[in-house]
Amino acid sequence: MKEKIQKLKNNKILKIIGNILYAIIFIIVLFILIIAILQRTTNNEITLFGYRIFVVATGSMTPKYEVGDVLVSKEVDPATIQVGDDIVYKGKEGSFKDKIVTHQVIMIEKENENYRIQTKGIANTKEDPEITQNEVIGKVIYKMGVLSLLQRAMSNNYVFYFVVFVPIVLLTFRQILKSRLDDDDEEDEEEKDDDKNNDKAKKE
Image (tube, helix red, strand yellow):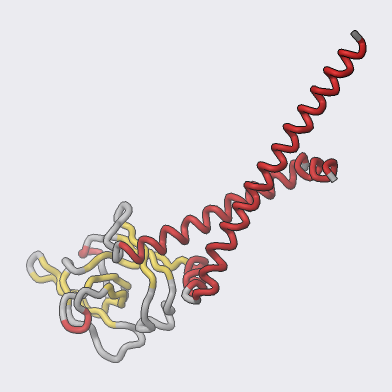
């Protein structure tokens, strides 16, 4: 049994595959946890080099963006915003007050140094209240397909626990198994040293 385990351990291909899978699982779990923590604790106030990550909460932009889609926005010069762009802004009046909204620009006009901007959800029949460049958080530049699937799946508590905790259990099991194999190797080395010492003693 030990010989079989040792052969598996010494198999270079299996080692490479194991390390790759370990790295992928670790990165996915870490990324999911970071996104979940940031979404729940910062209200998207943290920005990284002008980039933010948002999760679509309503169906106002279907079919372009579905509930649970993960979007990346980037801070931009308001002069570059055009009709048809999807922007993220923080509402300041009515039912939009203090809400993070991702809608499409249907009108933008410059008045002196300020910009009047109006947006609308693709699936909505009514336009949003006008905003200025001061409320704009950024322009949507990318939808993260894989993370969107994971986010929608994790909206189910059972799937969330499965996606997060199962990999953690697997990683822990891998570390325990690795430690056990290392201990076995040390024991084998000690046995070999003992055998050598016994052989020496017999010869003397």
